[in-house]
Amino acid sequence: MVSKNNTEKYNSLRKQFPCFVYENFTIDQSSKALTFGFTFRVGPDFEFNPTIRFPVNKIRQGITVRSLEAFAFHLGLVEMISYWKAFCSPEILIKPGRLDATQEQWWKKLFFYGLGEFFYTNGIKVQSDELFAFSYTQNSQAIDKIEPEPLKEGAIIPVGGGKDSVVTLELLKKSGLPILPLVVNHRNATRQVLLAGGYNESSTLEVSRSLDPLLLKLNEQGFLNGHTPFSALLAFITATAAYLT
Image 1 (tube, rainbow, N blue to C red):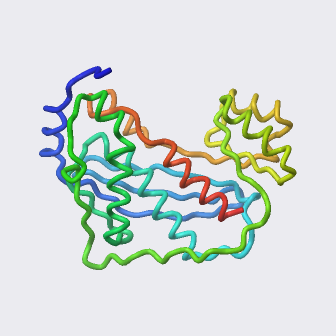
Image 2: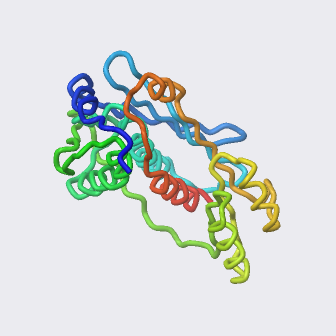
């Protein structure tokens, strides 16, 4: 059900904020966590710095810097959706890397279909080819592709705290495969599911994702808000976790 008609606001924001910038990504490893940080900027007044952290004690040896950079770059692209949707800028300037034509089309589809509920509930009718265009700096280069590596036996299972998590855990436990549950930002429901399944914090990969508080302030101020494709973000996080472990 359409809850509002924000078409006028959508058009106004696009004129006021014509360019959304993916400024950079950072990779920092401490004794406890491997942290991917991202900087997004819109105009002179808005800067966002979200992070995604993986626990160091679950990370294997032999990971290359180039591979980490590839995962960081793409995690930033998918994280960017949550911030871009506040402005819906018609241009996305990517500074830390460059996409080829096929990748651009893939990401445009993810934005368009992944934000389908967002557009619908905001009463915004938009064509996919009119949503935005990618641009790059003169010096930006393509990020190296990750070379495939032999996978060890096992399964990473994202646990959200619902019935799907319970069923998946129980079915795959019966397979005899080593199981690594993955949780993004622990909460009581996920802890209860893990405990019921026989897992604890030491046997779980806990990923911490932080939102920039400025985004929440913009929501309160009436910037565009709504559902974003969290499943897509989770897919990139679990792919990164699979490589790291």
